Length: 91
Image (cartoon, rainbow, N blue to C red):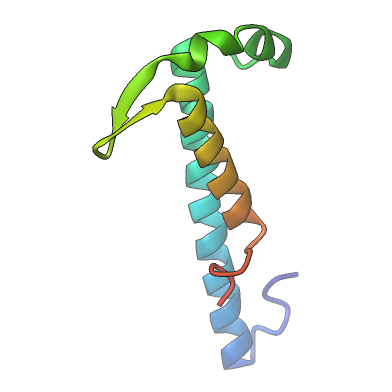
């Protein structure tokens, strides 16, 4: 549906840009899931929510000392931001 008017140049460019931004969102969501699995060894919702206190460990990320839970939330936010092409990523 995103590339329905593939014969129009501008529509085709916009479709390619939308796919690229969507893949950036995929990357951030994947990284958040990877962090959850690395620290908790599970992706089961009940277990992740029950073990949420274990994510208070501090790690160094890009020169910042952050809690793992903060970093996971940041990546989930960026992933959702990219997947829905919010302002700043839609142009």
